[in-house]
Length: 530
Image 1 (cartoon, rainbow, N blue to C red):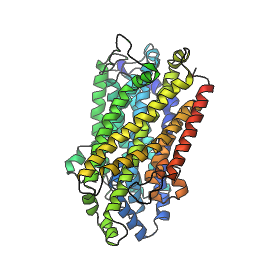
Image 2: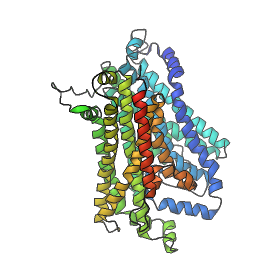
Image 3: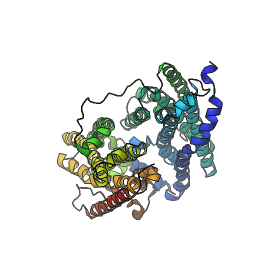
Image 4: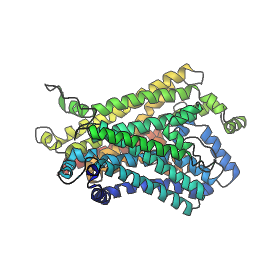
């Protein structure tokens, strides 16, 4: 046993020193997410009437509940913080833990660092244990710092610390999931896809179960449901955290057993060998082949999303009717059920559009990965021009993301139009179509970054994050229209309204063209990665 753990201490110390700082952005985001709720809520919603209006607005849009989970109590600062931060914050903490474990395990095997380490005095399980410890330590820091700083900013002690504990517990569970994925995937990218796919599936199922008032067993069958049931500020139950601890221990046992039986550099899911004869047709065919696996995965994901949101659309009036606050608004004549359904569809397609921009950004970042690993330079050493090579990847990113949205949009339209909710198939498909330019604008940010400033490739995700924050979080805090307009999805018109204005969308298209042009110019002039 001692031999298998030899060198763990020095390796962990070196890993924390080298990669520990990469957890800092996740800690900062989680802390900002929680503290901003505590600081802004009393200012934006000072009266009971304002808070009742907030509850009604959230109840009128179940798509928001799919992301943030149920709103147990929006009448207090801590209750609002728990609704806004618990589900989303746990998701972000889990992502940070997954990437930390993957970098310290499979990514080192892919780069050759693990082989150099293994040539010294290092036990068989030391690297996996080091990666897991990094994920666990980072999760503890993320939850502890977020909780303490939230208390300093005015949050209640018990509610804030319990919220931070859910961040830590979620990070622990998915650090263990990432450890298993590292044994299954053939490389770091596949391992990340398995772990993040598991997280995304559980996250979606948790939101869906709460939104449709599913049986309680569906909540308790989901590890993310355990965290929601802690209910900070609305009961403050600490005992579900023990479930998270038990899950973490059990998953880690499985991971270490799999690791003891896995060949170095291999995974349970071996990569399929390529064809004996080349079948790639042109540079676009090459881009398509390089991204084939994630494209298939995303296609399946958007089919599922289409059915999920389509189900919401078919039962939207029943869901809204069950909310007393929404019923009060309808009784006052402030709006109509048809208007609420229409606004719900706009939110659905905006959310689907933000998700669809993720694979587009991934395709552009794949260009940078190919460049860093030395596979881009041999291609460009031939008659293949830079503009043509880069353009094929840009075209794939734009087309793939658009197709994903239209797949889900068509399913939503088909399901909603068959139910008696006042939605026409053509209107729903048109609403999905007018959302496409907003997706292009988000992807254009990645085109710009990879083409002109690849050294800060992390900024390729800026468009996705900003759009998500302003589209889903901005209205909650009643931000000014001039700020909300930064998100391209703010300019998407509601095609079901008679006075729909599409001029803003033309501006989005113009900005998109400018960003892409700058990205192309930068890629043609800059040096390749060395």
